[in-house]
Image (cartoon, rainbow, N blue to C red):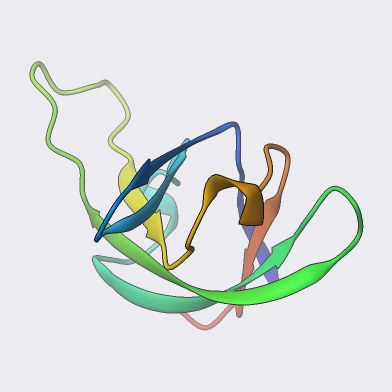
Length: 91
């Protein structure tokens, strides 16, 4: 498994899911798409969720382009700050 990112902040959007930041750099991970991820929470618990990677549209564009990431979570409490997001190293 490979660590994709460590969550620094989250924003819940009803009907869409939990947006997590920062997203991984586009050059470091293939996307867009959906991928099963393993969440390793600061308390040591582990959970599997679906992560959606999408193009991040920003004007002006940032120097380093990142993926927009949304988790299939029901609340911010499910994914505390400091949670690590891990993926199978197959992409």
